[in-house]
Image 1 (spheres, rainbow, N blue to C red):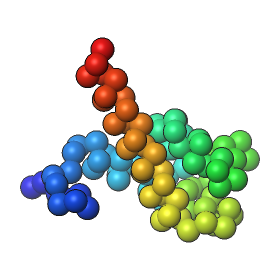
Image 2: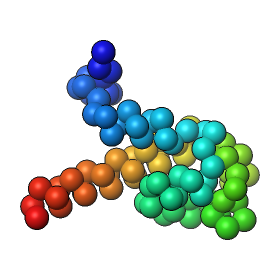
Image 3: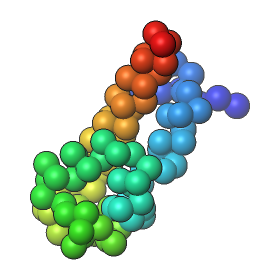
Length: 93
């Protein structure tokens, strides 16, 4: 069974993996390792990959004073845009 995204379209395997890989229980440094664009999002919110890198996303969000689910949404958006750009580059080269 396929699931639908917010626009009612079938979700890609990448979208499903992204949802599974970026959640409140993941460790900040693990997210950065798998989604390099995440570092920019964390820095924007003052989440340090050195001192806060061993925290779960939920705990890091709490210490930064940001809602964890808002942070997850930003991270997923960044990861999705990076993947879309990579796919676009691959189509042209």
